[in-house]
Every structure is written in C-alpha cells, then in structure tokens.
Image 1 (cartoon, rainbow, N blue to C red):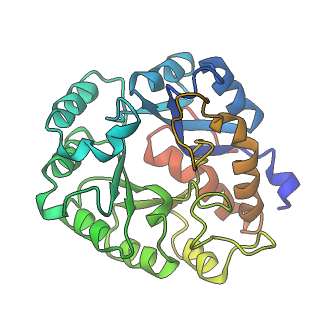
Image 2 (spheres, helix red, strand yellow):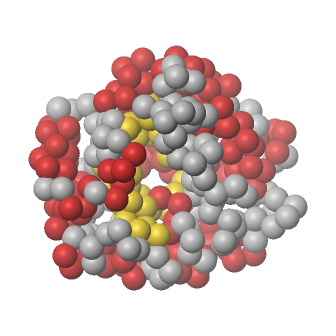
Length: 288
C-alpha cells in the first residue's frame, strides 16, 4: 500500500504523553481532535501527573487507555526508583480500576540501581502480573542486559519495551525478543528527530535491512507510538509549553512511511492490531 493510502488507515498509538507542560497548548479536547485528524483509533496515554491521562480517558473511554505514570513532575524520572511510595501509589491507582498499565518507567545508566537492587521496579513488575496490566519500561544502556534480567525474572508480566531499547541495534533487540516472549517492542521516538544513533530507516525512508528482517520475524511483537514530547532538547521548560501534540502529523507521517513498505497485513498488525490486543481493547476498537 502507498503512503498516501496508508494515511487514512486506522492506527493505534501505544506511547502518548499528556503532561502539565502541554496543557496550555493542548486541551483534552484538542488532544482527542489530534487523534481524529491522524486517524488514531486507540491511544495509550501516560499522564504527568497521572491524573491528566484520566481527563482524556473520561472523554473517550472506548478509545483512550490510561496508564499509571508515577511521575508527579519532570524530575521524578530519575527519582522514582528510590521512592518507596511509588509502589503504594501504584497499587492504589490500579485498585481504583481507572488505570490499565504502569509506566513509562525510565531506567537509564547512571540514574537507576542495578536490577538486583532495584526493589521498587521489581515490586512494580509484580503488580503488573498481579493486576494483569502491561508495564512500560524505558531502558537506555549500551547493551540489552538490563532488559534481559527484567524479562527473565518476571515472565508472567507483560512488558512494553519503550523505544525497543532506545539506542540499541536491531541485533540486541532480537536477542531480547527471542528469549522473552513476554516483551513487546515499542517504536515511539525511533525517528529522525529523537533516537537517531540506531535509526529504523535510511535517508529515503525505507526500513534498514536489519530492521525490516526483525519486524518480519516478530510481526506480532512490535507496536508504534508517537511519544509526543517536543522540543526534546529542552524538556519541561518553565517558560515554554511542550508542543508535542502539535507534532503528531510529523511523527505519524514518518511511521506511516515505513509501514507502507511492509505487506498490508503486517503493517496493520504492527501499526494497530498488536497494541489493541495487548491492551485488551479489541471489543471496542477496529483496525479496519
């Protein structure tokens, strides 16, 4: 299918943020209008603070899935793993029935404990299994070892690997998917403007051979998201709002470009069906 043809095809965005720094530029209704304009039939939303995701979900419960993000403000991405209250707040959120996932949880070299000592993360992974909800983890290391430790130790937890390792090459991602059937790879921010060290595509927008092979090897394990935070080099400024939602056409234009080069059934699976199935929205959302 051509990119023009795919532009009208339904997609599911498995990685959306709605943050306090975005509210001035994007109201909840503006956000839903953005989903309409980009033919996004389902959106997985992480609020900062978490309650902001519920504003979107309350307006469109058959379309928006709210995850419980433990961050209350920008700096929490480097503090959450050391805060014991993170676990109790997450349990209370899941018990409320309003949230249907945990994350995004940033685990980045230099800011996070080694997995053997990552007590808070381990308890959150346990909650994911207990409540049967996905846990979205953002790892940023030069090797896949941390994610391998996570998925081996918690095989009953459904893990969404944000950005599929962010800076990792396709071979490292393959290693994790081959060993851990409980991991799904997200492709949000794997675009020419964010994680650029190991791109998905060449200069012409075509999938690089190693990524093409990986997507075809695991067509049921990848999902696409926009990760609408912008600008990425000056996050959460006090004097300027985050315009990520205004960038949805740019981000999805990129992803639709390479999706259009896959077989139609595979493109629909990766672009929509996998996320809908993982977040148990098949009775509400159609990808056709």
